[in-house]
Image 1 (tube, rainbow, N blue to C red):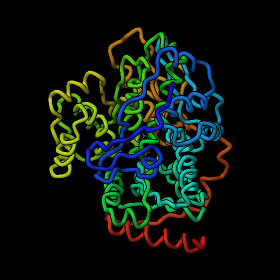
Image 2: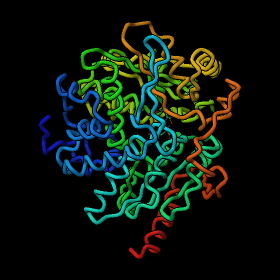
Image 3: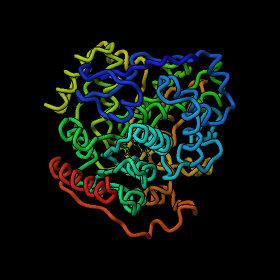
Length: 476
Ligand SMILES: Cc1ncc(COP(=O)(O)O)c(C=O)c1O
Ligand SMILES: N[C@@H](CCOP(=O)(O)O)C(=O)O
């Protein structure tokens, strides 16, 4: 594919400057509070896709990501960063498929360093950011919010890197013990784990407020690693392509069911379809925090409060990337997006305009799995196939099992290793999943983290003081 050297990104709210890939990579949230998307979608012909079949994961990654970079990173370097990022995975296929039924497949995305799908994007993102910051002679302060997995993956990917300080906000007491230790046992000076007295939505709201405080943002050179960062999405497009190719695409369509919280992963599936992968169905799977399933059913996006579940990483109400979908579904009308997002801030709800709702329903189906159904799926899958799934994967398997049967292969994304959630898996199946031996003694290591109130000012003060302290220590 020919690559335009001028790929531009536009904000879903329409008033932030248009940027190229490297600036979008460092920007995170757009300065008008919106999310960046490419001005136009690249497109892969069937032949171009077919040529990728059977190629190593990192080569597919390079080819798929390249048109989004728009020539801003030299090809040889981008290929090397992809190679290095995916060499950190413990499975030669990086994201292998496992067949669990005649037309049913599980796409295992948890073979990276922190056992969750976040590693797929984060390992590349850290390398891309490090490169851009080094070339520009700059440092960045990363502040991210996590319901459990993004935080560990980001800390692992950025720990010890000279050009970045990383601050991760997690909801105190609402992440699994393994997730917590993945964030709190890194002793590197540039890593700061913060337990916030609130929910994931509170943590994410703090991060967005910090981005929207333009003075603070500029003072600390704020960057983001949540899926508000476009580079996260684009890296996640790749495994839809590799899975599709392995199952016969582009000559045959494939379907995907995706356990969904912040809507980044399933939006990456939508992007895969937009650039040419023949996807028949994209199914959004939610746990009891079912705002997305309710929105597709009723057209009303309405917050009702988060309930804790055994799939805590999906305990989310404000689903960031839904804004990217709204932008597309509303015919890229930034004014509509601004109005809807304003409604969400003011009243915790908005109504999706009818034409946009029809467009969304044309692309997605959605379903919800409650706690009992999720546990029953873990149990029956183990009994019938010997496969031990984590609770997030089980939410998606439950929903996938309920959609109308079709001859198209259904791929369910497995987003975490069951050993990240041993208590829930054991309660459902009677089997306690073991952490891989290569993780060593990390559950016994000393934890380092701070506890802060659910208060943007308190977090801002903490970040500024610590980021400065790290810079002083480094003599910069
Ligand atoms: C294990 C796991 N599954 C699913 C999700 C949902 O993914 P997304 O937020 O991209 O919708 C998350 C977190 O976001 C997660 O950590
Ligand atoms: N489930 C996520 C929530 C943050 O999502 P992100 O994809 O926007 O980083 C987590 O594990 O933290």
